Length: 113
Length: 116
Image (cartoon, rainbow over all chains, first blue to last red; front, side, top):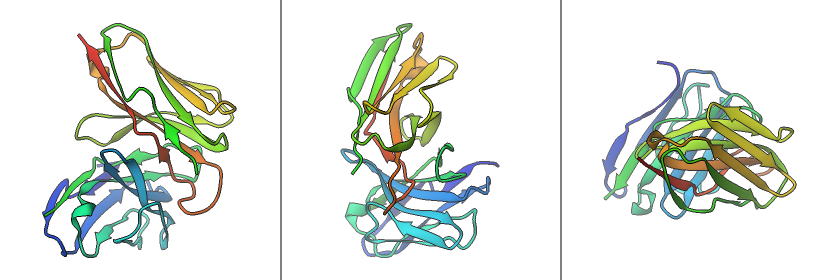
């Protein structure tokens, strides 16, 4: 299916475990983003990528790792999950830097217990 | 640092009413502004994108305006319907370089309820 998809939709993990959230887009968009959404904070940027093999930190990168070996995939890894990383995670993509719409995946609800 | 504010946080209107949602941003140096809707437990759906050189964009019953000089945007919804009930978010792309370049900076949204 065309679009941007995230997996899994829901995940429960234990403190200290490594977990990877997947994001796949079929448009060959250059830019991809990871946001987290929390009550009271809204949407905050974790990491973004301008192209394959080019990634950079956003506002709240600590505890997260990303990679982008292929244009279409942008996985987000929590190296050692903490309860403060319980959140809803959204992946997004857009064609160019500016003046193009950003499109979001359906989100992954992550609970760290 | 760019900050985006949406007031009110929640709004309830009767079906059929025309309504306006507000978005303000602190730095007028932006590339563009985008409006989204988010249904409970769902992702964000893009509604309208306004480039910095544009004053407004229209899609169906939706009309978004942009006044960069005053740091404001409005989303006008005509003849509201219960299906319009959702949280509406605005986001800007600041035109400065640095960490998170070309990222969207979001407001916290306005939760709209349209009462039948």
